[in-house]
Image (cartoon, rainbow, N blue to C red; front, side, top):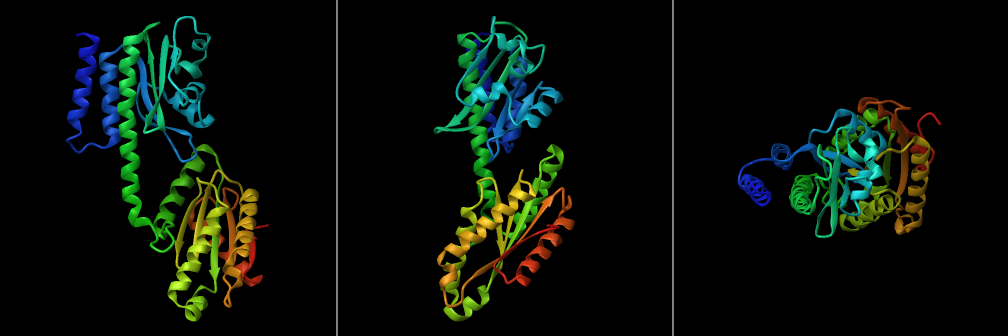
Length: 328
């Protein structure tokens, strides 16, 4: 079968599966299997990018556990970093082929990598390694660029479906996530933190005098103040931090952040709240903040949440406009 016919056959099989109820991961893994069956590949895979732009394995065939462990331990690999900017071809006398971090495994004689882009946004990286040297000629490169584009569609669909599924998890007043989402993401980040030995910090923010503001100014004005308070909190956080709200509490999960840095963020949040119009009303809103960190203060939700709540109570005892850090 010619190279063109092989490519068309694989494309058609994947497109036909769009009519059936397969997840994006199932579709991508099926494509990986087809590529392994039809080409002399040692390994093939597609990586997605998390909110911190670190690569995660989305689908693969042939990549060893050591390769994946190294990818997660280092946060990226040279070939992945290079492929974020454009197509990468390793073959012939390329010296990078002597480095397993570039060619995936010792058996690979040539390698190909390309960004998975859609409408100008890089969603991931497509990787392929061949047992044959100089295999990625012009014809094969063109075919594998098509497969990389197919993977871009799978990655975009997953992002789209994740956004749709999260809509009910949003607080209608502030646009922050709700308490259900907080518990889900806390469990997720604690699990990831234990696996890769990264700290995870929690910051609980009590919005003091919200009920009094509602009684004096009415719920419309109180809601506007709540939106402004939430904006002030969000302004001092990173894009990767998760923020949720329930009633007069705002819950922040900060992955890969230790307690000392989290305490600095909490002080910055307090300063941002004080600098906003919130403190100049007849009934000013104030913040009582508590900070805890995993693994120093505990490594489960059952331990960390009561500690954070206790620190909020301590900040209220101090006079409300305060930050309390567990065991400081």
